[in-house]
Amino acid sequence: MRNFVRRAIVAGAVGLALALIPANAVAKKAVGSNAGQKIGENLKLIGDAYERDDCATVLTLGSPIIDSPNRSGLTDDIAALLFQMAGYCELKQGSKDRAYSHALKGTALDAASDYLWRMRLGLEMDLKRDEAALATILAMTQGRGAALNSVDVGWMWQFSRSLKEAGKQDVRRRLLQLLAGQFYAPDELFGSNEGFRYAYAETLADAGDSAGASAIIGGLRSTSILSKASVDPRFRAFLPASFDFRAAGEAELARDREVMAIHPDRLAAIINAADTLRMLGRPQEAIDLLLAAGPRVADQKEFADRDDSFNWYWDALGRSYEMLGRYDEMVAAFTKGAQHAEGSNPNVSQVINLAHAQYGLGRGDDALRTISAFADGRKGSPYGEMEMRLARGCANAVAGRPAEAAADLAFAREHEKDHPEALADLLLCMGDMDGAAAAFIRRLEDPDRRADALLQLSDYDDPPFARPSHPIHSRLGALKGRPDVKAAIEKAGGTRRFRLQRGEL
Picture 1: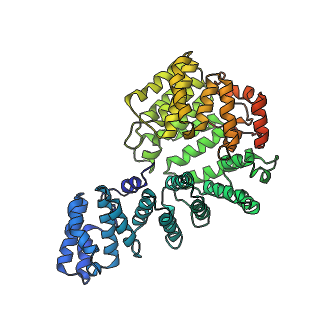
Picture 2: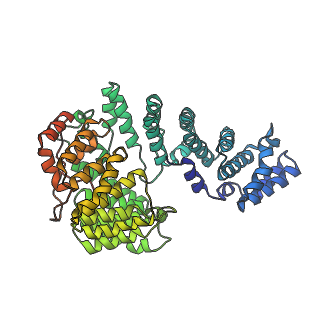
């Protein structure tokens, strides 16, 4: 399970707290209060120690102050800062319970920073204090909206998933109700609560509140989420057969361009627009847009989000070249992205995506050479591991080595729950139509997987380039024609025809 707290520490880094109140100001403010000269001297020593990441000194001098009955008479802003420093240092030393105790006390002060609120929430999630985490989110909707909106969206999704896996449906329903509401608007550039609104609509529909679910679905704008809703048996009646998904995609592109204009320093805005252009079947426009930003991408100071978005810029360019069958340019783009580490770890995403693109264009041996990068021990998430196994198994199948794919197929069968679509796709890729049919039927019978399976089995516009027969997509027609799969599709509500491009691997 993801360590929620680590992100909070990394985001803060050494010195964040002191950026809020500089170290020399700590001593100056304390002396001006009724804390006394000795406390003021200690606070300066604490500030200096924090700046050099000397957590032992921070805790030795700071803990007695903040743990005293009246916090030695400190003003609230200084006390909040000390709680934050202590929490950070206790996390570094692995003392999560003490860090949580101090985060809880610190956030009781009006002067508490957003960082301290995120620390409190992250620790509650990490320590599985589910009701406490829910109470913290509720408290953040009441006057601490900036703190709530600054929380990594991924934290919220993982929290929701963990509650679902633990069978805590009531807590999850209340969480989704908060995240689907007007008080949560994640401030990541393309952060949105539409996914949470969709998930909340699912809980309402399952509880028989069709009117409530309909109201939520009617307010969604994301083309991908609307497409999913249109094949979900719980929502498809809210989106008639005449619904124009292409118009929704064009409207999304217009919003993307508005964001680009408002945030010219964000590379993610350009990447998002390119993704939407490909969805609309306009890969050359995506390439033109991305290449126009190329000189700025080369400058490390041009984009505020360059570190997070650099590899995805090259990923978007690689996918756009792939859609046009421009193989050498595609490989060069993905390779450039794959050279960029993901956090402190070797790249996983672009290596896998390049391998998918290569075997998809009939280059199985090339894909095997690409995926051999995983021989160095690099690892992704459980989902990412399944994607790697799919890529390697498919590459072997395309290269005419089905026996070599056996180990990856066995792994995918054993870990199907981590990524059911990957197993189904690998079976298709290997030409095991009976196995693929069984895997798709399992997805179609699972309320949580049904809509994604129906989306994959739906019909889309032809790609703009007459590409080689894809080892997965080209077999979907035969799969849908099987009586057993056909019956499962009809029972699940049926597929749709979208005037868009098929979703990318």
